[in-house]
Length: 182
Image 1 (cartoon, rainbow, N blue to C red):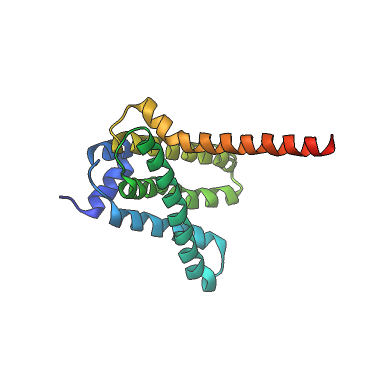
Image 2: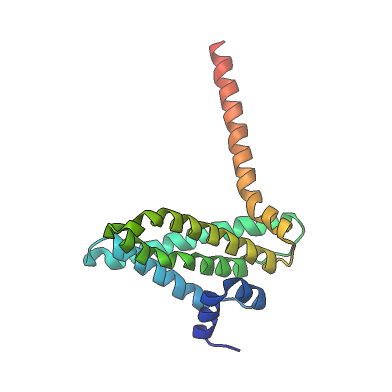
């Protein structure tokens, strides 16, 4: 097939084409490599050497939980819209998409340097977030074999439902509180 290094290189050089070309591949090893690098990068910024390993392991745990919840919500939305379940594959691919934040360590060094380019770190952070969203929508599109519009619906449906429920509870609670005082 191919090696982990060549796959990660392809993902780094052209992530959208790699996602499209390797739809059936489940990137388990690459997922853990990216997650480990992210945890090391963030824990290096956060604490002393003594707490380094503890923070890194904690970050890996939190990342796995967050990515897992995201994958489950996306897969439920996809199944609700008639697609077959691919929770595990989507989980690993979404984890790989978070690799765009590996740029954040050099970015934080630039931010703390005081150079005029430091002002651009906010824009670069925004660009990384947009890149993450685009990669994840692309992953949804190709994993479920759907159009871009339907992938957007699958991706944002869990968030829209959550906002709708929160708004409904807010309206219900507000109405209840108002009726108590009237």
